[in-house]
Length: 451
Ligand code: CAO
Image 1 (spheres, helix red, strand yellow):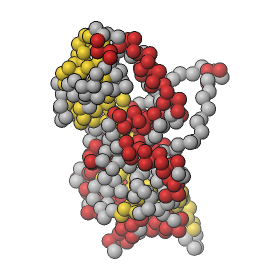
Image 2 (cartoon, rainbow, N blue to C red):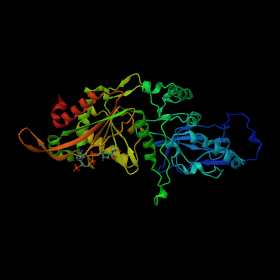
Image 3 (cartoon, rainbow, N blue to C red):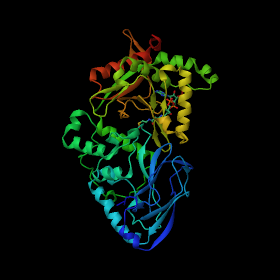
Image 4 (cartoon, rainbow, N blue to C red):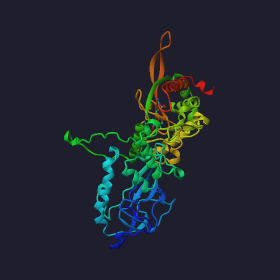
């Protein structure tokens, strides 16, 4: 429970002690920007109320209050950079906070009972401890940039949504800069209750889906529980949101890339001179963009009410990059305006940044279509998950030499399998296969890209 500024609180009569609040362990970051200061001097906060919001290049997290009491001093402002241990504010802590703790925890459990399974089972061991005054606050991730989406909402709106089991990823904010307000959450609930969400194509956030049964695996043998990495937790949420909200169709195809690969190899020395390495991916990016220009429904997003298509007149391609911490999707901009050397340079820079954990939110936003390339590793085909609110994604698998019948004999040809998953609300099956056929033709005969 949070009291409004100046509102009398009966507990204020109890004994007080000023507690200095510092930034807790926030993972691997040296310096993270403060993007919201959620309290002011005089505010009364309860245990777990959010105090500030921090934004790193990967995620946004809120720093919750470890104590209940009154904020007496705020030493940070929006735009400051902070690190673990930095002093951010003082709270005149109610020494009865420990007495309050079980109450605060009981409150937290209430929405958890109603929450979808994924949230309930999310590992948050510290949050389940009784929040005594000396327990360091545990940052709470609140959104992710890694899959190209993000939301902003105040703590009270987040609490409101949590209580009702609403996934804010699925809510469209109508406030300033797309901020989600309470009426947006109410509108989403209303739309689901009226059963209009499915009909209109509005995302539903997976409400009502039965939970996966909880099983004690130790009854079958030895087990070990390892917490998911931060990026995996964040991207997992976005993948699940997309999987539950987007009616996926995956079209499989393959392309004879023998000539393309011969050209790529012939350019090796020139590429080395230019300081880049050409892989099939840059050619695929060019072929995809040419196909996107011909099939504009693939370079689009569905409007939040599901009634229109927002067509984009720019061609930014997201590329899924595997990093030690998990999957991230940096975006290569203006692919239509760049040659293969420039694209390769962009790709090398972005994937190096991704692996060093240095991508900024700007590096990961503004994508139109995503390519997930597993071709350097192996596999024959896979079904990539659309990076919503984009409407289509391509999966590249490993090219292999194969005997191909040319009408008179079998010829050894290099054949690359690929797939495209798309949002069936926006793209029909016939259009889907026309798109993959077109991309395949461009890859087989790169000369068509200049037509
Ligand atoms: N078929 C055959 N060989 C391929 C290929 C394909 N489709 N794609 C790449 N290769 C080859 C490359 O040519 C290179 O070989 P050489 O060194 O002999 O030229 C080798 O495989 C390695 O390529 P790469 O993976 O380093 O480079 P890339 O441009 O293809 O990909 C990047 C760059 C950043 C996408 C990649 O490094 C990566 O992270 N891939 C993983 C993507 C991923 O995890 N996606 C998530 C899937 S969903 O969870």
